Length: 213
Image (cartoon, rainbow, N blue to C red; front, side, top):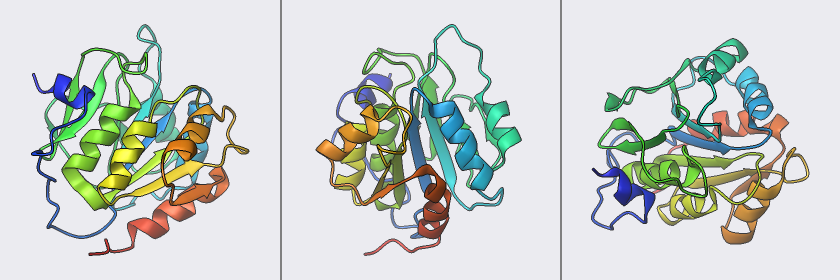
């Protein structure tokens, strides 16, 4: 099972999937924890339904709770959201939401959904998604950390930055729970620090930009 490899630091031999293909920042990975439902709702109200990007979301949820975020985001707007099946091929213009009690990873152009050891006391966790996206899509990735407690996502955002992707955090002064954005700022060279009301505009703009060689 490859999941354990992604929960730890991935090997350097992992290929960046489709890195030589269309050079757009068209893979967006978002991580949120406490306060994340409201933040994601607000963001998706501002995103167009035809955004030409694949969006992946990890929101820390209770393992016993129902899977409702696809409906919540679907009512808000933005690219259509759903909980992916294991090995589901990635389609651009769609939003993939990690199901409760499952990690969500990206590998070989597909979404991998599986159980496995918790990371940062969570399953789903943000770091495994971010690391796998960085290794699969390299500089095409935009990584975003939103409101939340503790520090999940900082290590994964560091890997996105190392692979040439764009790093974004919600302004801690704007976040309902500033721990996760603050941790990312303390450990990663962040490209953009923005309040939530400016995030959609930033993502739309960066999705239309070509990846620098």
